[in-house]
Image (tube, rainbow, N blue to C red; front, top):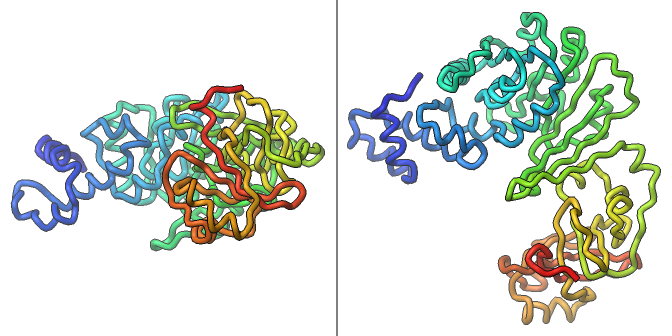
Length: 400
């Protein structure tokens, strides 16, 4: 499996083509395997933003569009390398496209890449050779069988497959491998296990299914929760894991927030009766991890309502871990509001927080179209008053 110079040139020349049209015109290019080229083009489109270095290398081969869709981004793969602390040999039990293995290999002396899908395995090993990742050894096997074959391993990494015959799986026990059964065995073989799990999972429930975790990392990119990472250390004896919440903004800035669950449970957040001059929305990782009260306590912002998870202040809070808005108007939600608001606010990004309507229902009632540079938060204040808070991003406005 490799790309000839002719095929690389063809892929580059047709990178922006309509692939269905390209496939229908395959007879015009007898010297090229057009279906294979179209598959490469589709896969490369998937990695253009998240793996720019790999996208720029025209020699690399991709086994399928699906493998490219499911692989880690460069940003999240580099973040996972932080979870290693002096380990020398890591075994990646769910190798896939090989992105995580490649970046792990830049942190440890040796990586064993495990993958049971033959086409994926061959593509990854070929790419590793082109990328000069000589410290990665390959093992074509299933994770359930491979872990016992790897000697002197310091850490296992795995990302259980959440698809079976095209069907998306949600229950942890349905994924392959079943980590609820495999985790105790892995911890006998290696002192550390790192698992990437579905960001849809409930953290507390997962901790009951997979007890003993020493850390949980919730990683978001551009305010979208991408990865849920659990770390276990053999016989660590930690009563509860520390939660690390990270978001990478569009310009690459890292917003970090970490806490212990007990801190969140025992603290009391200040609640404001009204919205101040500024409105704050914590980034997705904080909301996923449930640090609702601590966000207010640590930043000095007040919550609009115990259950709204929106925060406010009269003075701008620098470095708030999330989105910051300047409040322009607070409108009581009523029938008259719905009938008239679109006259002076025809377009806006609309969100609902602790509010009885969905975004679609609210748009239908108010006739506010998507677009523009205004933001509307439909929420409930501490006195159970329902309001629409009209805002603009604070980043482009002067503070004060």
